[in-house]
Length: 407
Image (cartoon, rainbow, N blue to C red; front, side, top):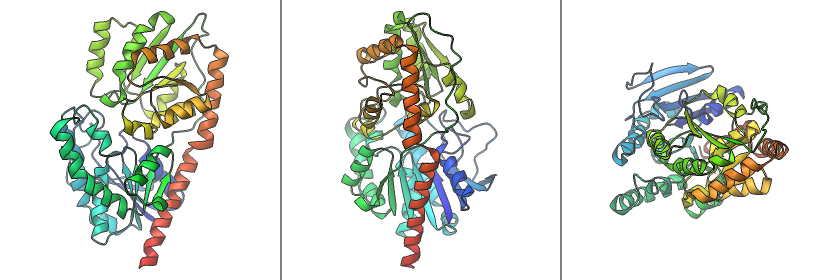
């Protein structure tokens, strides 16, 4: 097949799945091109070495990458964030000529606006597209602190609703990343025979070997690695870790994002000496981060939309063989509890997360190791890169063949 991947985010931004898919499809003999923006996530500033212009082309092995301009931003301003999303939507839509050389278009929909171009091309007779939904819209934006409440929420929901229904209806396939998300997509108009579950994946190297010394007393070295954003509810994690400091709990936040400065101020105000910050690390160095942790935190705010999502860091933690502490409700909580791969707590509850942190510190090394092994088994069985790419390849092939029949 000739596949065009459309994604607002692409390496060197720390969003690996689109590149994994591109390289995986290319290794399977397909011709792959990528349409993306200039890298600026999560800082909201264009990365050093890049200068925005109308078109930029680069090569990554057998994959051609075409970049188009956008309004670079990742602030808490609703207007600026919308400009970021919609600027990519419209600039990528102007690359219709690139889509004409494809048999099928794959959309990595962290925000649904990435699907605007493929939807428009399809409406006007273009190639079929498959949506890979990472966050449900408009839920994930109207529920955020920068959009929630009042006129903004009503305007955004009212404007996006009809277009989202059309985008779902015209898609050759719609992929959800969790069972609840798939059922929600069907309830919102995706034909049941075109709704598919494909779990996100992570790099699957060998499970990490801990470099921590043996604990002579209760201890829980907990790491959070990822976007330090508003939706991750790290304020609750900082307060819970501070409250559980006497139990031997420490929390290290690895990454960057819009609320990092606020969290640093909170740590200072609390005098939370057991909470530390570390700059982002490259993807290939994440095993070093997990090797210095007893547990990894996976957290999100208490929003209905998050009950049907599985953050990619969850798969990364399972792959590393590190026990999980999570506040993500719904599908993630069920997976952790049913598989006994870690500890769970209520979202946005300092008291509940403090209890989980204290329980984590009290577990024996054998108990932790067993949770980590079960997590790695869960990853191998359900979240492997190979199975995910193979399933998406199958869906793209079906979409492309459907077009051939119509021709």
